[in-house]
Every structure is written in structure tokens, then in C-alpha cells.
Amino acid sequence: MTDMPRSDPGTGALIGQALTQVATLFRKEIDLARAETQDNIRGAVAGVGLIIAAIVVSLTSLNVLAAALVVALTNIGIEGGWASLLVGVLFAVVALVLATAGSKALKASSLAPTRTIENVRKDSQTVKEAI
Image (cartoon, rainbow, N blue to C red):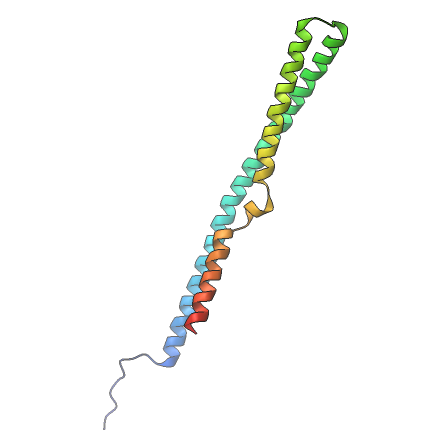
């Protein structure tokens, strides 16, 4: 009897294919995590930009409020001082809004690669079910 070549792959070949697929999946998940983290970092940079804008606006509001206070104290009853006071309060509100938006963008939860974590969890579950 002659041995005919087997058309089905052996156990070693199947294990090799499985390991190759797991390694490929792992690399893709790492690439996804890297891309997602980079996107989250871009959002954090935008948040830092908003905070810097809030600082600039708040410094302006302090200057305007100081000028309004000086004018109000020296010229009680003159509308120019109160107008300056209103402008200063308006700038303070704008600064608060910018700082709040910037702080939200910098939360640690917004920086985590949540989609990748979910994909890894699903992949792990699929591998467990296959075994």
C-alpha cells in the first residue's frame, strides 16, 4: 500500500494557523488602540486650547472688572463704569463656559480607548467559545 498525501492539514498546521490569526488579531487591536488613543489625545489638546482661551478671556475680564471698579468708585452714578462692569461680567461668563468645556475634554474617561477595550473583550470571548 502506498501512502497517499493527505489533503487535510495536520494538527501542527492548524495550531500554526490559529497562532498566526491570534497574532494578527492582536496586532490589529494594538493598531486600533493606538489610533483611538491618538484621536483622544487630539481631543485633549483641543481641551487644553479651550482652557488657554479661558485664561486669556479671564485675564481680560479681570482687567475690565478692575477698570469698572475704579470708574465706579470714582464716578458713582456715571453709566460708563456700570457699562464696564457689565462687560467684565460678560467676559467672566465666557471664561467659565470655555473652562468648563475644556475640563470636560480632559477627563480621564474620555482619553481611554473604550472601543478597543470592548473589541478585545469580544475577541477574548470568541476565542474562549472556540476552545
